[in-house]
Amino acid sequence: MQKYFDKLYKKDFHSFIQELESNIKENKKAFIITANPETLMIGVENPAFDAVLKSEDSTIVADGIGVVKAAQMLGMPVDGRVPGVEISQELFRILNENQKGIYLLGAKREVLETLVKKLQVEYPNLRILGYTDGYVQDKDAVFDEIVQLKPDAVLVALGIPAQEILIHKHYDRFEKGIFVGVGGSFDVLSGTKKRAPEIFIKLNLEWLYRIAKEPKRFKRFYDSNVKFIGKIRKMRKK
Ligand code: UDP
Image (cartoon, rainbow, N blue to C red; front, side, top):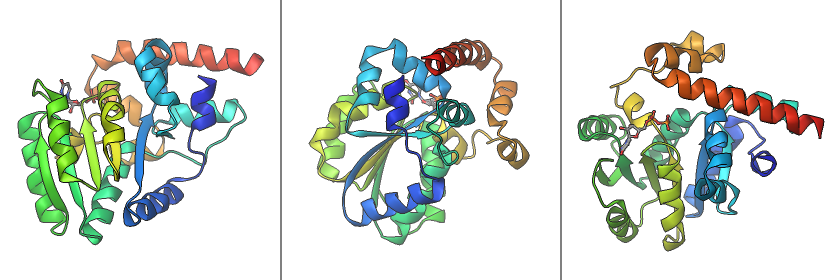
């Protein structure tokens, strides 16, 4: 867990987006993992994902407020959240302005098709090089296709940790590109699922809204957050 916090991106959202923009313009590579407490707890319990989180290749950003607070408690403060949904939106804008190419993998087929149509209207200069829903059997074969297309960005929406493990497996095959595991973002960006109202986001209560909307998330959320807080407290005492 300590290593995750050592690696955690410490600057604010604006700086992060600026760095992302220069990386895209200079055809560099980056692999972004958006972390909330649940993500980091999965890392502690799943050796394959732990390796991905600790890898030199990946950059971890604080998606959830829980990670921001924990970093503060550990004396390694970060300058605010870097929310995954907003990373995707900024990416679309930057790619559109620079006429760059994207590949989208994940979510249900209807969701993905709705998102693609929306992007075509809102970002006419964004080059959508291809897209595949997240329920195809052979995702490695999809990556064989993505490698050929040489995209400037690849968004993978399969949920944690499948999306990160898949990206990590194929990352070395690419010479450029921004790779992000975006979880349920396609559902939100397509308009299929609503993001929390502004007031929840401002008050850092987006997690509460998500649980209220999807009560089945509660147990998973509660278990991992209680364990997470326990772990952070222990780390503080050391
Ligand atoms: N998903 C997918 N294939 C699968 C399982 C899930 O494409 O085999 C998609 C699902 O449709 C959803 C996303 O992955 O769009 C996961 O969303 P969730 O909010 O559960 O992810 P989290 O951000 O909580 O990891």
